[in-house]
Length: 263
View 1 (cartoon, rainbow, N blue to C red):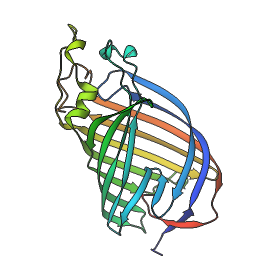
View 2: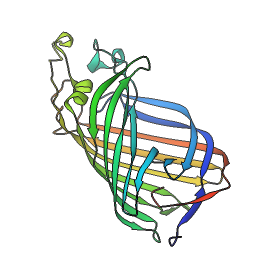
View 3: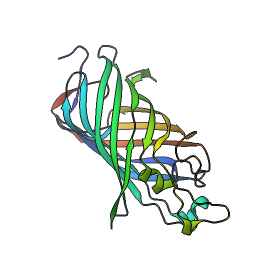
């Protein structure tokens, strides 16, 4: 067993609630607040893992290189409630899924910290559950720093991330394109192109305290010089997202498994 390796339950199950705020879409000047229940599920298997990084399948893993599946999503947007999109079709929720190649640049198990270069490439699917359409792809190379600092008398899981986003023409057109039939005096036509999609900084902090789990996140994206910056649907050149969550863990496995600092 590596020095300072930590043993945790193979799986944990509970329930909780989360409150967060998101812009209607990146570049919108209107945001929505959400309060949602969620199942708390953690699984630390050899090939399938569900943890603070999300649900992912481990396709390949060595001491320095990992290949897994990356998943993300965005909520739907009711265009009638967004000033910039008045009269335009609603935006369906999107699901992003694809491979992610991870290079572990530094890992100090004794000090419980790691630096990883992550390279996720995800296909985007727009769906309202009655149909599904392709909405291009996104590429998000980023550096991730994971550590276990001591705060308020206990160890927390700290995650910091910085990266550059890139999107295909189809992806940018889905969110920022304006077809001729939706042109107004204040909203000219816009044909999006692929390319640079913004820079992102994000941080998260989580902790398990007995049967309780608490966490929070914040994410800032700068959209200056993005390929879609000239779209009339872009009302501000940044996006800010934040949220908190808590959960009560009902049951966990007796079996313990080794975990690294990123987990």
